[in-house]
Image 1: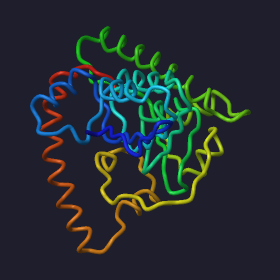
Image 2: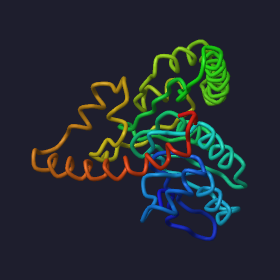
Image 3: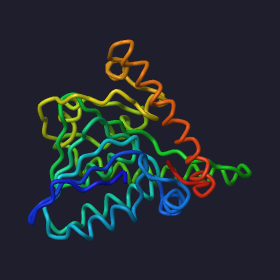
Image 4: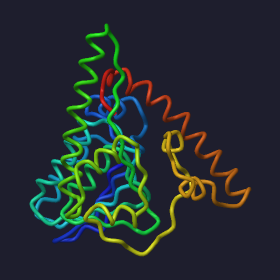
Length: 251
């Protein structure tokens, strides 16, 4: 399971949320066809977990490259409706639609070596010129909605124009930079995982992030690369299934 409950007591629990965010249809197919669903998460998964944790304070640890916009927004709304205090912590990085889940928590915390990434929504689209223009209009509408969430989480004095530019530019933020823009608490640094997952294919990863991704001894890097390659093969197989169902889904 990519969503895991740990350290549960009568009053609190830790919820670990990692991997790519997909919709319920794609998630159901992965559950049916694959041996495990590690690396993927979808709304029904977190709904069932939250249902079992009613009334308990949650600490939500996030390490995600993002994924489906409607699925991510649904998951964020579920967390925002939780009937007990919620704290979200970025374990490694929180990218794209995963940031909406992060900002849905009552408190947000980041180790100083963690990262946020925000960017414009995208879609796989086809059709004639009118169809493509309508798709662009829909994406603009979605972006306005995402930016409203960022504005709610922003510090006093941060303008909508600045947030719009950050989204348009596909902006990576260190924890310290994020705390200068958003209501985020800084935590002491912890060790970051070596495998970058699909984030290594994003367009504007800053050099400081790339250095962390490349850190390690040659032997450790070779072993990690082999592990990542094996994981990539499995991810591609799953992606073929997911894309068959998620045709036209925003990511």
